[in-house]
Length: 125
Image: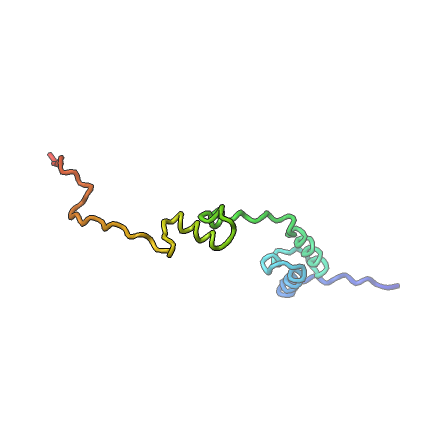
């Protein structure tokens, strides 16, 4: 007659090491491995496999859409060539054929605040 050996329950550091081994083998992170439940290596391995199956790509949420919208809306509608895109960009941004902005009129050098109205004065009574 053959006696069946029962697994020895793990405790302390041996249990933590067994959790880490079982979790890493199943593809879990160390933080996820620390949450495994079981008293021996067989139970920990089974729990790790079950937990890893919960984190498959089919159960994960889809990635969030990127913010910012469409890229390059200032050159859409062109013929698809680089030179057509450059010409469209220059037209929309007011650039000449060399890519320079036309000269602007200098701003007036009016001393004082242009938003002040000289008609009314405020006094405190």
